[in-house]
Length: 236
Image 1 (tube, helix red, strand yellow):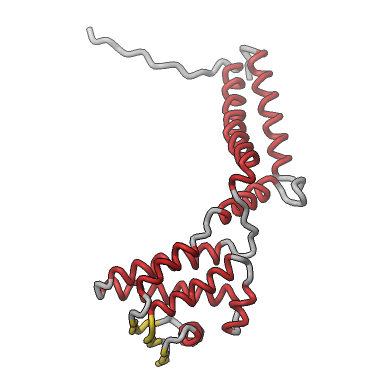
Image 2 (cartoon, rainbow, N blue to C red):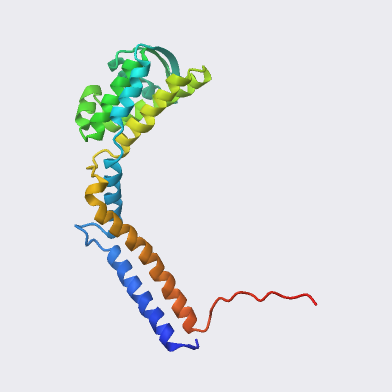
């Protein structure tokens, strides 16, 4: 290997070495027992949860279907899943009937969804014991069963042209159940309270990416390798 510009190669080598040193530090458990990636991931999850509380808005949407009757048959792959889901709907005041792996449901759609939103609210606030005690099962299993059943009902209603009802069910799934399930046991934080940390992480990410790029650029330049715009051939 022939080095044509020792100064540029030395700059690139130093930058690459320090880059790898910082990378090693990032993968070390120096952030309260966590490595840098785990710390950043936890931080972003807490901030994301802090801006994902849509329960009040969803509750207003559910009021639009209050008193509307729903009568649906939903088929599961396993009979035990149908039995689990039957407990949820029965607790919400719906009439349920099981036949093998098919669950028949009849009741007030507004009442069912209001119950589901209440469960989501408890989960979002990390009070899963309320849901677990209510149904006698793991709280996350209960929420997953709600999501699965409502997704099937939403699909059926779209086929039946019950668009408004399907839209409200979709909102309950997307903005109540999913945030509650995904952010369960995570302490939410407001972005405004941690704007400095968030800004610092983003600036570091951009700077660190450029750091490696310039390291490669200087080392290659030191070896005499560079990119130049190709000359345009002129036709005679």
